[in-house]
Image (cartoon, rainbow, N blue to C red; front, side, top):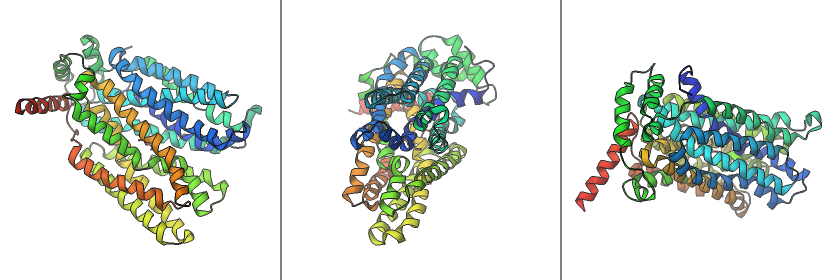
Length: 460
Ligand code: BGC
């Protein structure tokens, strides 16, 4: 179906809906895991594996989808991802034991990983250059909305076995609703005009571009001509990724690993446990701590959406790195120097500042830039690599955070000192490695990269 009759807002909201499921499916398990553990009489390792199986599936899903998306298109694979979301959500809701739950979570992971590798490129390819920052931030906005919804769903269903169905089954099953909406959305969304040109469907690409740009100051015909110029390049593969597109690969992997290694998911997945173990908070408060984090994270991402096209991406990244390094660095020092009681309230405030720092910068910009920095002929596979790096980083932090915490006798100062190191490292990474992409078309970004590579080649 053409983009006709669909409002631009609809296209970007539905296009980014994979983010909502990404946030929901990674966030929901924090509340559901202890309930599943009791119901299936699992040991702690099995419960841990249920949590991390989604991350394993995501890494594999992200890695495998890229070449397929360069071949079959972003839209068709979003549809496949939505079917996997439906299947994984249905199976996890009806799981009967450890093995079936792990299978369901791996399928869900596959869907999440695929969506995370497809959506940034899809949104970047649909957006006009002056608004690409905000429109790309829609993905992160959806992720944070998904996390918040998961926490709210945990809160709403906890101890309510409606219709005789266990609470955790409702929690996991509620993902069926956004999955069904994504399924319908991906049937009616337009295909990416850049993918269409690459495949030689210039007329359809022109229609989509005219429809997408009708309320903007951009000239769709000029954009089409520019796209045609880069689409003339031969189909890319691994060779391009290690030659002229290598800077993009390095930036993508660096941004994505650092996004995880600054430790955001220790807060998103484990903070309630930290407060219970480290500061002696009551178990019943855990869910409220989560909801608080979810709200701060979502509101700060809304702010990011507002500012993304007003400042350079590099400036915002640097700002975020500094805010994160200072807040968790201070947090770490305080927790090594103050008593547990005295450290509790400052820790909470510093964590809120840290979430702010992440949510306005590294949260949205890493996904946004992933969609922007790769040349058209390797965009799908490049996005796969970057996205897989993110999931692998996420897996590492999730596996080691609780271990690190117990190594430091439940003192959060320990793991957060490690995260501070990576936040400081991220400052240097931005200064020396990250290019500026604001205000340029995807084709400008690609031409710059090709010219630099050609210059380097001729200098050698
Ligand atoms: C990260 C997720 C994280 C989320 C928090 C995303 O950008 O990739 O791992 O849970 O932000 O808002």
